[in-house]
Length: 366
Image (cartoon, rainbow, N blue to C red; front, side, top):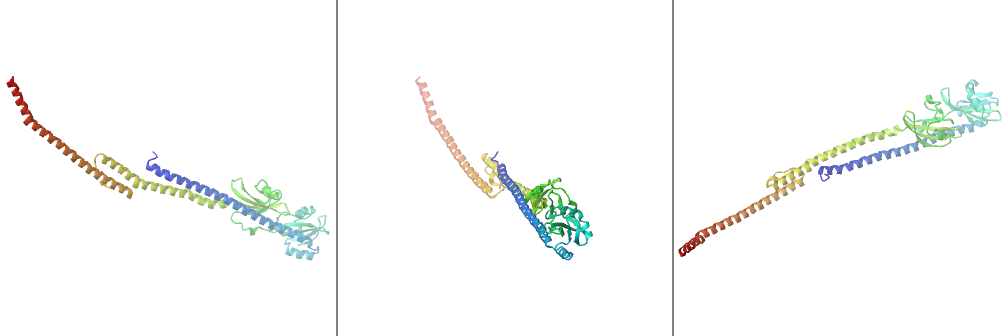
């Protein structure tokens, strides 16, 4: 069975198709693995950049606040420069001593300020919406009381994230305290992959699949000196979709290769196998005495036609040899017949007459 040309052609093409398929599959998988690592490294680096931006902003305002003189004019000058939300001085009991801007602005921040006054050292409030801006309060104990400043939080806009990627900040319990989408503020992500790590001061990247089955690349980095962390969240589909576009083309390429293989097999059957089969039948007819069977072309490639011409030449030579042999046998047969006839004449004309005469003499003797 394996000596059949069709099987041999199929066996020569099938391994190639399998090798191409395996190489393409491994190539796509290795490319995806490399993409995962590259995207994870990038998001981890972006998270560290964002965390450094927040850390620098918090630390610089915490250093600046104690240097402010407690008089209203100095407070105003400082507020106009670094603390766009104002600066206020509170006594140990939490009473407002002086403030810039007016005291009624600080009245709306009393709950957040009270939480800061309970801290013995430098403390920060969670980011909050303040008259259309997102601000953070920082408190620093002084000899006169506790200075509290309000400043705009970093926006992480300079990280260059696009599409559906998002950068946000979580607190020490894994809740979102700053997000470009206000609807997600307060969302509990404590069970989210990467959140536990960043809460414990670890930076890195991981993959997370949410309840909807959507996979995200998560980069995370802690914000010093708080227990907060910056999280970069990016759907893996942003990177997989272009790969899948090429992956979808892979079956089409294999299909095209299969079609080309079938076309090759068709032309192989038409130009090689079928002419060889016809040539085999011609050889059988020659074997049965039809020496002119190979006179007509059988088609196919040039080598098969040359083989037919050689077979036809051999058949003609065989026919000539057969004719010569028949002529030789005919001559021998005629010679034998002539010799028999000569012997018969000699026997009739000589030997038989002598025997008859001898018999008559015997009879006369008797």
